[in-house]
Image 1 (cartoon, helix red, strand yellow):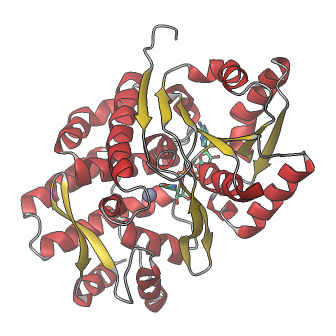
Image 2 (cartoon, helix red, strand yellow):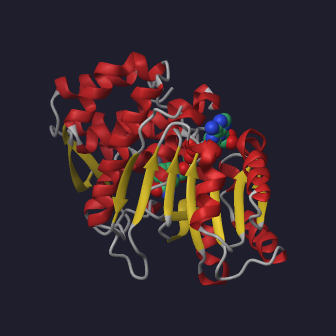
Length: 368
Ligand SMILES: NC(=O)c1ccc[n+]([C@@H]2O[C@H](COP(=O)([O-])OP(=O)(O)OC[C@H]3O[C@@H](n4cnc5c(N)ncnc54)[C@H](O)[C@@H]3O)[C@@H](O)[C@H]2O)c1
Ligand SMILES: [Zn+2]
């Protein structure tokens, strides 16, 4: 493990009150997590927030080693899954943090997938008007995407991620080796976000995915480390230029307008990444039908999604009006008609596209 090189990426956000932070990617990093935390935040009370699965796999161990290193540490867990992104869970977290004596100088460590990062980060952003927070992403989705950018939050009955804040982490610590224990379905979900980043921003990364699809599916650690590194660099570059999501950052919403609406109408039985995979294909179909990309480019995307086992059929939607309302409610829309980010090529997008409703209805009618 020792010979795995670490790569570090520095993110400067220009956000008020936040200083640059470092993202470290290193195989085997988890073994040194407790000494890193103990050295970086000596004298601070550390609250690890995790979920019921990650607690068993990595959380208890991290707590033990922090306690051994004489760090005043606590471990708090939430039920695994998207259902935990709600106000009740945030309230429960606030209560536990307060009961265990959190103060303005404490550090919250979000150890887990995108759900833990979003909910734990939101609890950290809101408790005592915000305490320092560290992301230790353990799912592929969180390692390639959600742990960087400072968006934290929860869902609302009316839509995904409608309640939240911008709260930049003070460090992001990524160990690709923990992906060994990730279930296949969650691994695939993470790949969907990686494809989104590649196809929307970088033709070179897209070719990398095409060339290495097999190794990626086998979870080759070297290839995964390269994939994570590339994704994070691309996302960080976008986020740095548009911290508060008012312009450029909208490109990261590719596949998400349809994806978020699908997640909602599925009652969150679809994973976020699965909904994004369907959203990517559906929105790219619209882009092709509107003449923004060629049939050949569309076929290339489908081919890559196939190679990565990411082809999911558009589901049959019983409540079409709920789906259309969810589309309009997507927080990236302006006024009532949903605005889409659409591909204009492999590695490029156009934002704010007003898609005439027949294009959306064609998807709904094709659903099985
Ligand atoms: N804030 C952002 O910028 C942003 C970006 C993209 C997605 N998201 C959010 O991220 C969420 C999805 O994230 P996710 O796919 O990581 O879901 P998740 O957090 O539910 O994790 C998926 C599953 O994997 C388990 N798990 C995590 N790491 C593991 C490991 N190393 N070994 C074994 N099991 C492990 C979890 O317990 C969970 O059951 C969605 O809510 C989505 O909205 C946020
Ligand atoms: Zn996403």
